[in-house]
Length: 486
Image 1 (spheres, rainbow, N blue to C red):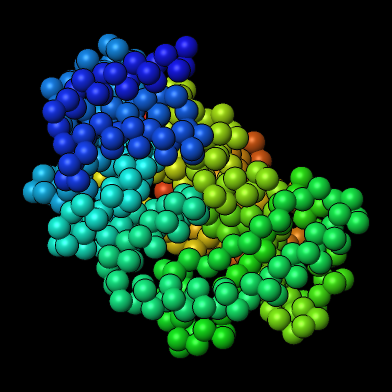
Image 2 (image 1 turned 180 degrees about the vertical axis):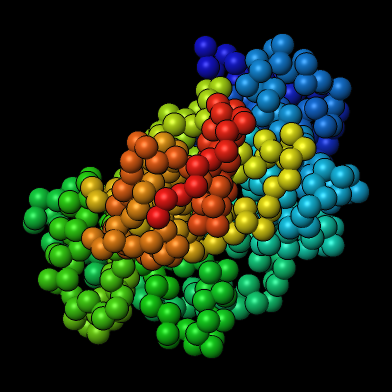
């Protein structure tokens, strides 16, 4: 059934784009087919793949949204419509001022335009990736414009979605057009360094393979070379001193489970000397975009420095494909719940998507949204705090106990009487810190208070509190609340 729908979409798109050519002179259909292939490589769901094939039809051909809905269903039409609107929002034309007058921020504008379905953005990222791969067909001024926008908007978005492989390719291709001289200098420098390190790397790979095989550990071992744009940014931090950068080349070890990750880390440290302060546990404390892995930089017996990254297959898939992999593993694909922003069981690091959907819904309803706070929430540094049972909850820096309580569940948030942080009673104005263990105290008799607005910073908590206060006023509209007794 699935292949028939995709084949049908290819036929419809081929007919719709008939006679159209790309700047390269190729038939236009080459582009949507390339976008489709990218989405398939990312394991996206069938509706998204079909929408990838049809993504330019409404904007560039006589095919209508109604035609797509009749042929492929509401799900595909919804996604194609989203991509079409996103293109308009991105174009920077005059209509953007009426569409989103509250912000001139490209990144936020893109996210809000995506609104109710983040898969729209994933299609747009696939579209941009293929356009970058064929950028040589455009005139130099267009090349620079697209490349600059990619570095400023699309590559950071790929990073926020933890789509590592995409971020690397986008950044490097775009950088080669934005600053070709610098790009070629760094490319040559990296190649020279890697040639000189080749023998050492081969020897280390042999030693590690022998050790893990002896310990009867199933593993995959591969090398990872730092991307050119990442090197460019890192050199700026280290005063252009390449010798201060230890992860030019890294060895990546992929194993079956988390326990084996830590076992392999111990074995590596038994073979080589770990460098002080260079062991990072992103499994226990994931990065803000959800990336998980163990990193360690060691000094070999020959006094060479090398970084190791150790992770499970699922972690590797998520590190490479990010949000797309999350759809694959979490089965959050084509449900109505997804489209309406009522996703259940999203991984904690992806809950910002729900907040984005809520903000988009408010904007569409003509309500005001504090975009500065939303931006803070989406892109601020994250902190990771724990429940007493050891569950990890990610929050924006500066979050307070009520933000944490509402993140756990709105019913918990609405009945808070106090909080213990790291086992000690604390007040609700206490800013949470990375690694805190937070225990929320509740009572069924406690109800939400309007004064709590001063004790929360996240839009999610604010929305839940507003709903609870609204329900309370509907139940007893004319009652005056009793005075608090001391």
